[in-house]
Length: 436
Ligand SMILES: [Zn+2]
Image 1: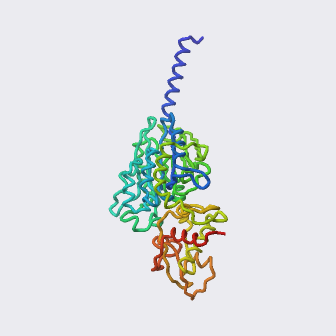
Image 2: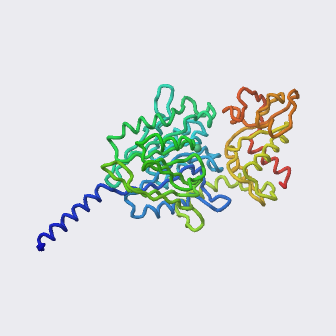
Image 3: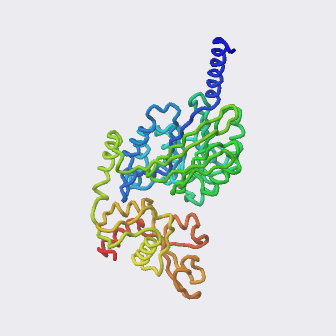
């Protein structure tokens, strides 16, 4: 017969074992955003907006002592406050999110690397990036990673930018800085961190293939928080107990990844990922709304002016054709050429404000013009139009395309410089009055 004493002992042992098990498996939740792109106000579909996002973040943080809030880069560039004031106010406004760790995106270099240096001091969070270096190998950011103590665990967070930064930014913007191959660099740092951390997270402002490569090829990285690609992942990608997540851009989603970490094994024991839509069901946070309103007021006079109307909504290839046509017409050229990535928003149906064009073209890109034989024209132009190889044509594009050698323009000279593409399009819409 089992005595009461023995029952008590076994109960105690069970409790001790349960406590020990709890000790070894600990909770960690990552609240993550990326590619916020200065989405201060809700978009045309009434999604996003910094004030709603602030509310959503604070709700998730309530009582969550194991939560870590991270930003995976491209905080600026997308709307007029960013363009007119070179991103600085966006970093100041975003201070209210109280990110715990942040990394840089390629667009954080859009106003030149000296301005990016100012972002680092804007107090938005420690900004880490492991692979942006100068010719001597010196890091652009103070640190490649940080280690945070969360729920008794050492959580290392590394930041990384895509390997070919020069394809995304003109040489003058990058100055002496370039990016090292991200996979190799991250692998090396993760190996160094192995003894000093319990779980390693990568803020991956990388191309999609590079994000996937980290998941598959760098086993030390437990979680890849992707950005740069604006669409979120439908579901978390899992590979050998490691995870890759990515929320939608522009503040339209907040990601929440709840993890159970087996601390001694340094492995994820279980996980759950959700993408929280930022829409009109979420009330705006008053302090953030006030800070956004203060800056919007300063640009409103310039951008909230009617310029015409559109009979239909224009997006992607339709918008690209429209812009190329407007470039050719305004510059007296035969053809226009614009990269799809240079168009950042839709043009809505109905009344058009200058703001709509600013949102489509936040970049201060200038139109440039050159003359070429049909046989020299970039493939995209030759494909879209009928061209005779020996005839001379005039082609209008933008300085960004030429400076990065995109769309097959490498080696082609565009000696004539025109207005900002944004101004050109605003003038063209004012002239047309109605886009059919
Ligand atoms: Zn990016």
